[in-house]
Amino acid sequence: MNRLQGKPWLVLAVASAANFLTVLDLWVVSIAYPELERAFAPTTLSEVSWILNVYAILLAAFLIPAGRLADGVGRRACFLAGLVLFGLASLGCALAPALSALIAARALKAMAAAMLMPTSLGFVLSAFPSQRRSMAVGIWAAVGAVAASSGPVLGGLLMTLSWRWIFFINVPLVVLAVVLGALCLPRGDARVRRRIDALGAFLISLAMGLVCTALVEAREWVPWRTWSALGVGLLLAMAFVAHIRLHPEPIVSPALFGVDRFRSGACGIFAYYVGFSGMLLGSTLLLTDGWHFSVLHAALAIAPGPMTASIVSPFAGRLAARIGPRKVVLAGAALFAVAAAWPLVVARTSPAYALVVLPSLLLWGVANGLLQPTLFATADAVPREELASASAVLTMARQLGSAFGVAVLVSVLGTDAAGGLDGLRRAWMVVIFTAVLTAFTQGDRSWIRTSSSSWSSRPTSADAKSRRST
Image (cartoon, rainbow, N blue to C red):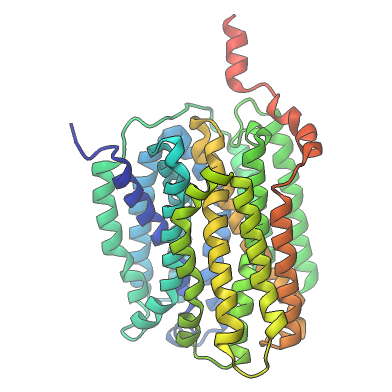
């Protein structure tokens, strides 16, 4: 028997490596836009932006189907298949002869990431005993923060060789992760055989795809097209909700949303990431367009925020065990509000990084280190056989919140989108509001619990089988 199999710290290492890859891939690419525009000339920045947009849209669209697939076939099989597909897609990106081929490879990469994200978190939660899970999730989140902070810097360094190296770099990391995963990930993880809910998968994928497309393309599209895509997406989402309440074995169990702690976590993640994306984009615009920092200089300037989060995250679980998860989230939300308020109080028209941006980033880093692991750890509140699906829902909330935050920020900035201080003041006010909203999601919402009790009391497929057997 393989002595490495099921060892909690090795499982955490492999799951964190997958999290690092998926987060790094997003941030490394974000800095490469100008070079890619030149490499594939003649082309426009709008066309090049689809390298990132297709990743964000398809990732959100396929998270829940991928989570249900992992619950059905087993997290180990889904995780390893996702790693292999991610590596092949990275190689395809690196060798792409044309922009269309690069975008197609990025689409495959998004599907692979959708298989990796919920299963990696599921492995972390299932590998550790209950008293140590928050700590393990903190480390998992800290690795993601390191990837976020190092991504733009690493991308800038790799770009000195060639833009293709920002994709080649994934291949050896994937090979190492596949080998370690095959050796140490536990076999025979919990799986539930279910009928395939093809209609549910179609509805949620198309709904999330349309909503995210409308949000990320709002800057380029005419208003009627944006609102049409958003409206159809929301109608499909409503149809999906009606479908899963009636289907005997739905792609997402309605009972998940009857668990108060999980529901609070999903709402909190969405609210926080609306502000997260606004804070990040607002700070970047201030540095690059307002104060005229170079892209690499701006990336180094923003790095203290994610790096602080990576230091704080592993301790969030221990703090949650001592004072309770709700108080940790409230403290994180309060710090996030102060981080957004700081530039409003001390804003300067001339560059004053140490006074204006750095304190804000450090406060945000502490807030992020408290909020991320605590909110993602709410997946532990659901039954083991639903773990990958629950993780997929939380990850989808993060993707939707991020896309919505960028759309809201661009709308709020308006004609001041090029780093104007008036627009940025409005943007940071929005961030403060999302911090308050994040805190509100953890409050007493008995009226929500009452209205959602019908979800959790709804007969499950297991109940139906039990009645049939009697």
